[in-house]
Length: 575
Image: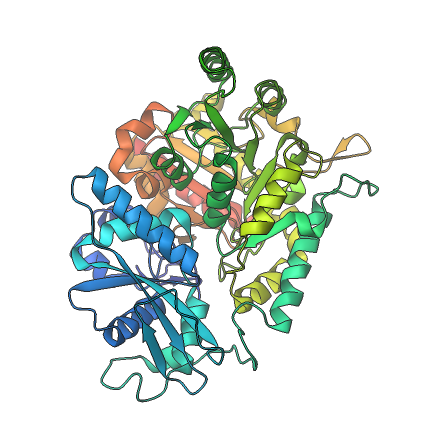
């Protein structure tokens, strides 16, 4: 049976949205085909999550720029700033050097003038043309090193957005694209702004960014009377992606102790884990996020402090609440006490918990959030935020560093879209919380958690049951009553592959990467996020037979009917 909400494999999700941020993987077989790069599946892929799947408009722009630079046997990644391009260059050279052969990676600059001409310069230190509305920076590398380039694109989130690429293409003259195969819709853009630097300094963009920063600061107050230690709008920094915000949190915290390691507490989002392990001096990984892990972390800190009293050996502690995909919440009060004792900042990712449901800023020195997810909800724009806690001991130091180094690379049209999408954020959270709790109650009622083995469901990971005490400690309260819900995300772990695949294939919802969408979205998370390390992930409870459900705003009774139908299919497959 083909679900009524079936979207052809590889097609954008949401359908017919030019800047959609997901791609359809409607069957488990499609997921495996995509991750194993099966030729017919790769040919079918028209869209995907932007850090994993480079948008076609960006690829087209890269090819045009490469032609004008005379690139032969090279590919390129396009960035909105010289700093991002240099970081890509440094990362690619460092990674390839560790593998035994440093790559030749060069930088170049392209200016697109107001009359649609390209001005190419290999000397990236040259002063850009003041009349150029778009200035792009390219990292050019050998064509066979695409996999190394994509590692940086995926894990640091600094590349240009599809909207910025579309705008750049729309400016090109006929001469600039002569002889190149450019789709007509790539030459159209809704972004029409006069003046210098419309990409990052337009009047509309400034208003949108200020509104987003103010909205976040207000949400973090949770209705309490204002105090001198509340987050102000200028404590909030915006980035083009959530991973870019995390990278900047890593960058600012690591500078104080460049020889130290990070500490990753809990099984975090896959790209966060990889970023921390690859950079600096490495990472202490505590994948269970348990009390035993806390004991081990403290033991390591004691030993390293005894060996070098001026340097505890850890520059920052990174964690999530709750974690992705197991929805586990760390013991934040104990982590905070440990961090204070050993003078270590905490970087906390609250993307899944979100600004409405969780009141966690007091435990964090830096709060990072992927605005791409529920803050936007529409799955048509990327964005990230970094908040420096004004009440934290590192506030002045971190804020000074960020103000000194910050470069706005959040394309104005993306910011305007994000601001518009997020206006009803709080009301959407309420609907999604209610729907998700009903869905999770239903699935749990047919699981081994309550003694029902027939559906082959081992566990439903959801904050209502998963580390509930630690989650409740950070749930938003008003007048002593909980007003924060349990969020819109859950993961269902199956005891056997047939039940898991039947459930996934039969679920009548869109299927693809990302979460926090206004519509229900299903992901084979472990296969997508850890395809090359399945056994390692399984050691920490992240099973291959795991289906992650991001519940949306659909009518609740219809949601439950579709889930019940998929549960029946899982039961039949498990029999």
